[in-house]
Amino acid sequence: MSMPWLSRFGAVCGVILALSLGVPGVVEPFTGETTVTSFVAGLGAAFMVFIAGSVLFGVSMLRARVLPRVAAAGYIVSLVMLAALAPLPDSLLSSAAHIAAAASLVWLSAAVWAVPSTREP
Image 1: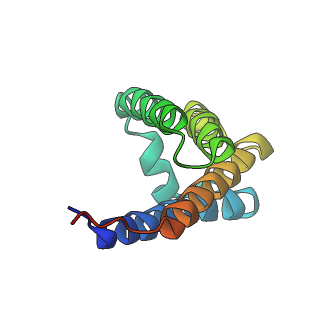
Image 2: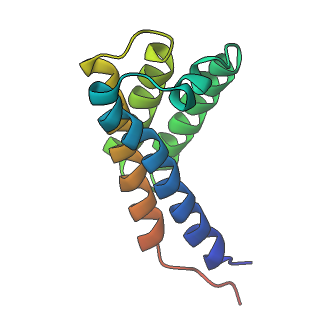
């Protein structure tokens, strides 16, 4: 059963997630860390689950060879780097991680959006 709306929904969610990662990366170097962006850093143990899930999902994208491999590899590296740098003070490296994560998510979302729907008879 084909669900083209699910691919579109996933693409839209990917763009929203990319914006939620990329915008703080662009804003924080100028304004400093804010309460809203610091809330994510306070989640502690959830970061380990996030890292494990990001790596496993990224590896599954690489192995499936359906989405662009560079974007999938960028997803793994940037999201792990983003989680690892979250508890540290803001720097150009953490801003770069935000921007790289946003770029890989937008690329993956665009790739999902472009996948033609396949209908089963």
